[in-house]
Length: 358
Image 1: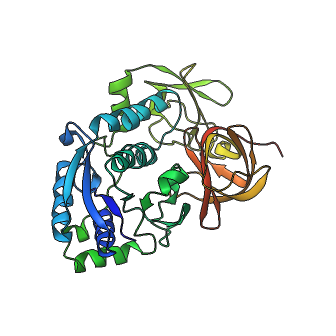
Image 2 (image 1 turned 45 degrees about the horizontal axis):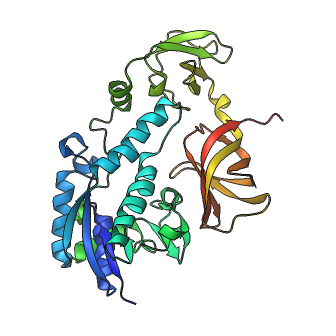
Image 3 (image 1 turned 90 degrees about the vertical axis):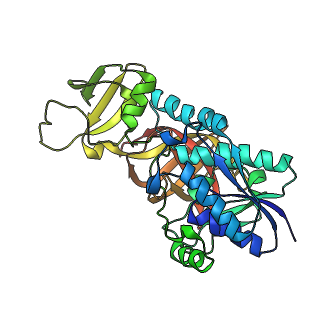
């Protein structure tokens, strides 16, 4: 069946090969690069970027080699509202967001897909490492590159209009294929870090937008051990850059245990105090039939993070997840993705964590 396919082309090797495979499969493919900044020079460049002027040029050259039409769509305003401002507001609220996950949800599979459907396209094609069987989302065969975690926030309707041509291939084979196809991006490094923070200094980026807000750093007993310039500059599990003047009594490093935006307080303590075995998550998105009662599965709590056995108790708009073994450094704002084998069952946003007494 021939589809009208809009191929999202970031300028990297993955999206270029995905577009080439879609065209080779006989689909009517049009390439599009999303311009996500009104001032691209302010975004990361080279190996560390994913939406700069040089990426746009790389995407256009790849489209020329493949032999497909190519356009640049300006989504900078939508990206700023849905990703950048969300990132800032989440940190201001004491949570730890994942901007790449939010970009997939709000830009690639909301703004882009909606526009594609309005223009008469049947599907959007991306270079994600994941597999689709209808609307069943599965891990990519290259588990080191698997991106099912960041796609788990998509709805079944969105996945019904998605193509992931790379899910059955390893990254090494994709680079080799790109070279065989004559794509100049075959050896282009992968993008890293947050694309809209040019120098990688998240704390300075937030301080510029939220201002300084000095407050106490306290230990678990409530004793002040230091002072910060803004609680938003910290995340649960953080060890470095804590600005603590008083060493711990046992001489061991301390970690951020909690961030309270209401009192503007950062709480620190020993590494083992980061362990949690119960999670409350909200706003679930189900990619499988919603269970009627508690069920066992596995849960992943961060991109490329460890996977834990768990029991999930679904409620009204909330999931209670009991872990089979303690997880460390889990922060509100992160996403819990549920798996059955390699199949994604659903996802939800972590709202709170706890350690159940033995």
